[in-house]
Length: 300
Image (tube, rainbow, N blue to C red):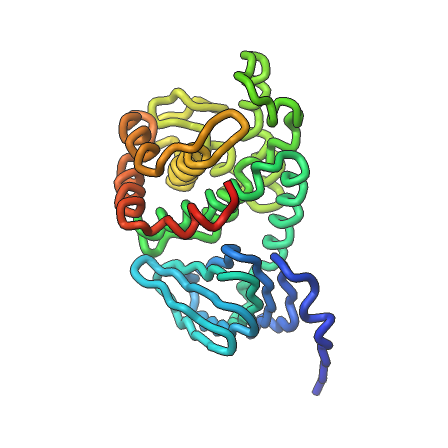
């Protein structure tokens, strides 16, 4: 028999975006997550039977599936058993949750790697912080509406880290308020390949490739590889649309924000470049107000 006592200061390190694994014997895993507003964890189906129990210790959690949103308040508990579709659990304000799974399938090392690299990007480009998180949120909602079993874990990681390669780009170029020169634009165009190099050995090939290809276009006009049609993964197609949607609806140093429907119309007018199935989902969500919480949750 063994007894291990975890004091509160050991369990609750930090207040935002942390994960602490308290127990793991391969048959059961217990992890405590602290999340800031609109931050989330992702839950996708496994090839084996898994039961996940989520307890809200403090705050409020919204658990999204393709058809429903479940609101879980402080001291509430929800059990997900042998799920057949993907879910993501999104915090409303500061939230601390305890997640117990019947198998050791919570990848806390990936969470730590993502957050460490995000910090580096934040120091490089002040616009990337909110942009990356919004792109991840938009991408997950579009993916679940496209396919209820979509692997939003990999998609979310790729969407969050798609611009990490910009750490190799000069801050002067990233913050330039006027039109870039051809030489400067060529430098900017290197960031997807740089993202791939950074991510491939830490988060894996699928995530790294989705980040590499988020500027590819269906007609072959994108970069860095000039891919066409079926050569571009669905992850990359979804992130590309989420990326453009967020960039155009935000105030940037080089442009004023467009209305969400104006961006949808722009994407629809470029049907040879973007996946129109995802654009149709985006239009429905914009018209129904399903993205308003993301649009208004961050300072733009």
